[in-house]
Image (cartoon, rainbow, N blue to C red; front, side, top):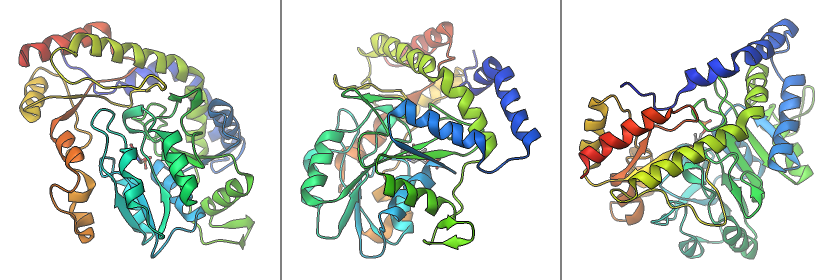
Length: 365
Ligand SMILES: *Cc1c(COP(=O)(O)O)cnc(C)c1O
């Protein structure tokens, strides 16, 4: 059996008629940048997340970048995040000439270890970027409380957790700023690059929107140094359709994840989701000993796997200038050696999942 890691083809097939129609409307209108589809998407995103303002943008990376720019983060500033994430989280900090300050993760949830944040705060700290990894929100209330005490901002990197819930609220709307990605393989994906920033503060919303359009306040009047960070109308059209079915898809993801957990928890370490929150399972990641050889054997049976992430950021060549060494963030290092993501999508069929479980059980006895 050949299994897709994420079945985007089956998804398109299901919504094809509506998506094609929406895309065609954009083509006919020739309004490719901004326009009614983008406006409708931003309204839909706000009603979905409960966030007062949603600003669509060109990617999750740019959502993070726009947020830091709006907070005037730059040379001499420090921003706290974890080394166990996709590089974009820390890359944007460094791109603005600020310093990424890493805090290790919790061994159960793989999200930032809140008990280790305060010791890293200095008078240069401008923001904390907790990552809601694999789709499960970080300990946002505790993080917000720490940030409030030191008067620093909290940006949730919700690039994997759009749709997740935390204490009755939606991810993306759990702190000063929330950022998400609509990269095709994320839980809510478009057909190219895309992202969004979420804020409740009106002034902040205006500033972020402006920075995403070259710092423009009116046409050819530039108040800030900005970027070209807009979302295409075609991508907005795709997202408007997919958002309608998103809750159904999340429900399927959770069912599939629960089934994996039930069948696998005796032989591997399965995800640990806290009682006061949900996960949208951007990844279904387990921990196994001898990970690379298990992955190889699964692959030989037609089962693709992935590693999110094989090398923590503090050990990446791009961040060598920070002067970190092996052993600095032991939990991140340990998890990066054991973690492995299994195929996950709302379109994974029961017989496919049975096959994956059966093969995995045959390898790890
Ligand atoms: C995907 C991702 C990003 C970047 O999003 P893009 O849309 O690919 O730019 C940032 N942070 C995390 C945690 C991600 O998973």
